[in-house]
Image (cartoon, rainbow, N blue to C red; front, side, top):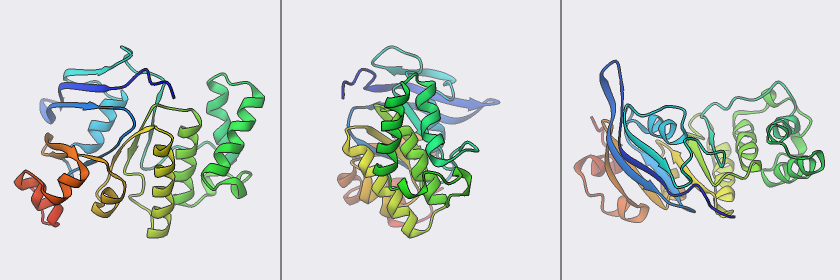
Amino acid sequence: MTRTILPLTLETVSYAVSGTPLLRDVSLTIGAGRRLVVMGPNGAGKSLLLRLCHGLLAPTTGRVRWASGEARPKAQGMVLQRPVLLRRSVAANLDYPLALAGLPKAERRAMVEASLARFGLAPLAARPARRLSGGEQQRLALARAWALRPEILFLDEPSAALDPSATRLVEAAIASVAADGITVVMTTHDLGQARRLAEDVVFLHRGRLVEHGPADAFFSVPQSPEARAFVAGDLVW
């Protein structure tokens, strides 16, 4: 994969609503080919950070800068906690964004088949997408994003509402995406999931970036009192 948009750099990024700061002075660089998990208690700013990175929101102050210089490059994608699916079949949900991207019909057909096989959705190809289970819908959303060949993929709590079995299938799908060299940035409340998937961790508390480093170090020797309490399972205010 030829990478042209990474690294992604946030320079003293803040975001406020009606004068109330929700994210404060966050500086962060996201490089290529890593699995970065964003953690923190409720209200810490995790989902907000992803939306600022993806370009769904603009910072109140500071700068979000891609290496390509684009404001919102196409070679990135985002999967929401509750994915938006078309009132069409599973296969058609995969084909539609490829058609919008201008791929010829033969290439679209091949990519749809590859995506269905890659994410275990081939038996469901003709089923209406909105009749899938929650876990199947998440895998479809991941497959749809993967088919567009992004360099970086943002995942907002991708398994928050799923049972353990569906969660493991989604985690396997995420690992499969990352194995292609796609940078994955995801939020989660699940410490076990973070330990399984993260190579790097960002820890937010009250809208501030408190820690950023390798996952092994974060989980074994967190540096801040807030992170130590979070890893221990204590309430963090």
